[in-house]
Length: 276
Image (tube, rainbow, N blue to C red):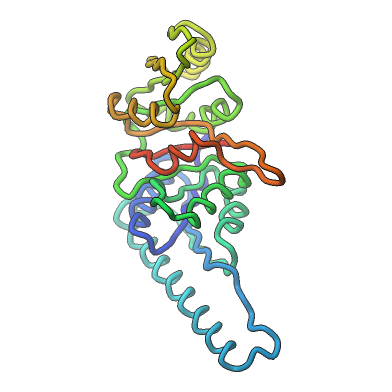
């Protein structure tokens, strides 16, 4: 599988150009098409009998949102021309809620590129990211404001043998195949016995080898929170990308992200590929 359709979320945040550049380079690398999506937010029509002032304010707000989208489109065109000249791209503007729009559009893409290292306290951006990850059915690549290179570098796989991690490895295979180095990172609890030949690590090594990916193994035996352990290991391993499962758990009527996944979403300093 190659990434023939790469979707990138556009916006007016500081990291927008960096993720456009990475998405454009990703599309160029695999001979694909880049789709930039501007979701303006829910379109609110003036309430009946709310008066002319309400209608005027609503229209002004709509025009501001569309102006931001137009500026994002210009940034998309300029960045693609500089970073991946000749790569085909399109710009979609949708006047609806961002999480819903990106999840819907992402279902007909191979990979969805969003902003990474979510700012502390930015519950809206976190909600959008989680909504896309849980509903799009596609891998999500979170790009920090100042990312390292995406392909051709050192890729680390956070591996526990679970379903989500297995899905993430399969979704990341195009990037694993062009990586200069791949390391399986296995975090064990204090009762475990870390060994590169133990399951489930050994099975993943054999699976990757059959695809032409020779992976090393790094184990961490600890009772500390898994997210913090992974982030510390990334620095020691000099990783340039992390592949991980996007885990969630049920709470009454909704599925929410688990603590480890949220920790990585908020603080991973390298591009992070998550699959659910």
